[in-house]
Image (cartoon, rainbow, N blue to C red):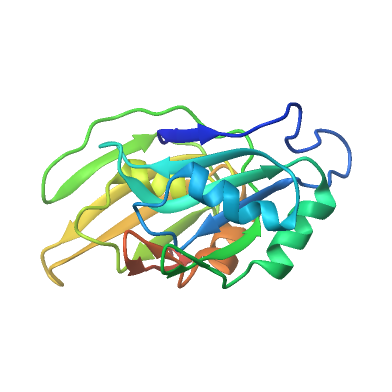
Length: 205
């Protein structure tokens, strides 16, 4: 999901898989779309040993201004969040939090045109698993939403639609788990995607 520019040194970093895991992965947003994985890796090294940097990209291969950074040790990831939050890379103020991505679903579907710009996924997810995403940019598609919100949990469906009444685009994202939808609302509201600060709330349908 989501093309990526990947780099890094050393082996075997990644999040610990078992019981009560201590995450070594950090989610970064607010980056300039020209920032490379090497630029970001050099900056993130201030907090510890970086194993891998992944720049998240849209379907055209352009950075969406977000990335994941994997450290060798959990305390290095924690230090990065504490010490590098709000720091400047390529004249842009970046923001960090723990990377909560787990088991992203596979891609699917094709982009449509104006009234409905394509979608992904099926009919899973229960009550209160679906969120409304407002104030999205005109060039945001379902792949961008799926990649962006995939940081919060496993996405069941992602759609981008156009409202003729308000002349604006909006998104609908459904998760498999209610807790992931709650995480998205708590952590993604106001976060920028493609230059637009998203409005994220429960979709009351």
